[in-house]
Image (cartoon, rainbow, N blue to C red):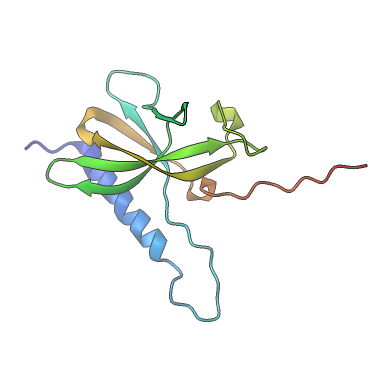
Length: 135
């Protein structure tokens, strides 16, 4: 089987994601907020727009890697829901404030893609701002 570049890159991202999930565990007196996701977007070889999947009727280009079959370069990706400042689905990149984990997932052949764009892990489950209205 031929090796594909993106498969190797995704394996590295997955390993870093696993390290991130373990960071800070085991402390007795220090509480660190656990982050266990490195969100990313995929670029397909024949399109200029990022690869998207449908989540509850809304397209999302944001994913989390769950596992990779190293022999076939098939990855299980969970879909991340883009959310705006008001807690509503973000319809554009400009509206994106946070990414929420979902239970929906897809299988993809990583060799079908040409690039990966990792995003900040701080985007995942970012708390919405508390807005106080002036009365």
